[in-house]
Length: 219
Image (cartoon, rainbow, N blue to C red):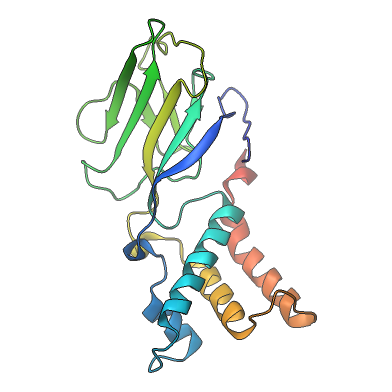
């Protein structure tokens, strides 16, 4: 797992797990849209296979950009609060979300060994601050406050949040097109090795679409 480091922020985490995986309804590209791109609208035998290609292409683009295109819930764990400002990996923290779903929770083990919970919600309890405009989003204490004392232990601090764009309509169009291009390439070429200019041209085109979305270039 990649460790991220930015000045004056806490970025080194022990683990990042998907607490709630994406469903088929969270796909940035639907099977129907992928089939339109492939020009096989009336052919249904490969629908399941194409759905798998969409999921694989989405995952590849997310890894490349360090972003979340298919909405999912993450839990990132630390052994202690790493610094005043803590980065939340795989941005964005859910945009265009309802008040109930735009929630970030911090679970930690205090110095007495008791598990405590802090909550931030878009419209409600805010026991710490979340800057969703920063890329990646930052969690940090309220004004003139600090993080509580923690019992130093494996994964003593765990932050859970929903990431993504809140629906396919909000996913950046370059990412959507890159996913379609990968699906088209993998559908037509089902072997692991392809030698020639076509593969290089695809690699360049996908990279050109996705490179502006790679948040690390702003670090």
